Amino acid sequence: MAEQQRTGVHPGRAEAAARGRAGGAFLATGLLLGACATGCAGGGAAADDARAADDPVQTLRHAPDALVRAGGAEARTSMEMATGGTLVTIRGDGVYDFRGRLGRLTLVLPQDPAATEAHRPITELLAPGALFMKNRGAGVPADKWVRVDTAALSDGNLVTGGATDPCAAAGVLRGTRTAAYVGATELAGTPVRHFRGTADLVLAARGAPPDTGAALRAAAKGFATAEVPFDAYLDDAGRVRKIRQRFSFVNGRRPGTVAVFSTTLLYGFGTPVTVRLPHPADIYTGRIAEN
Image (cartoon, rainbow, N blue to C red; front, side, top):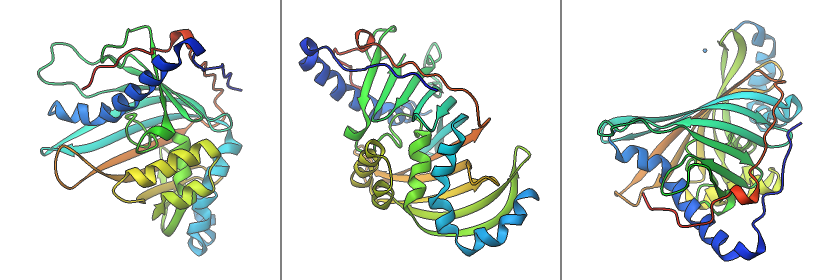
């Protein structure tokens, strides 16, 4: 079971903490766009085919509950955005506890061709209502964390952290409006059922835990559209093994909308997950440089 520590800010630092959280939100929002600015598929699932084909919408809406029953899992993430004809990808690797809704990811940013040294990997801790980032740079001391209130982000941290919180990624499926069963296939030797559909963030927020619901409602308002096209792959236990989602948002740097593709892979179910959240003294509350 994951161990969660208190993460509040000392009362004497309230004003500085507020500035830090606001700066953290700006910092997270610039993560993917900042990286872009550098230029830089069985047989075992066949038995469930008829049931999946009969009601794919309900099958998908219940998928997040199967993950909670599974507990911990290993996770790999990728976030892709095309800019100037170049595909920029941020990759993540880590673990997630779906019961405690706590996770840890290590993110690798694409290398700037003009840079003399590679980006340091960013460590992210995911918690209910909060995102903690370390080694983000932007004037933050190397030994400090930045805390971001995910409900305060315009996308609820579905995009701007550089990786979609696995709980939120699966939670979007609670808002499935339309879906079709594509067929049975395999992922890394595991039989899975492939579904394709569209989810609604507003609907997803209604069935989510309060903190996740707040983030999803923020995303519904912040994105260019509340509709999220997706491809989801479920195993025989109804657990999400892979989900690929397309988020659209308005980019203030240029006219029109920008599409970001987020992919989450889940495996190693039952993996013990321990996440220790930062002590308040280790959370940076000073000024964060703009990208």
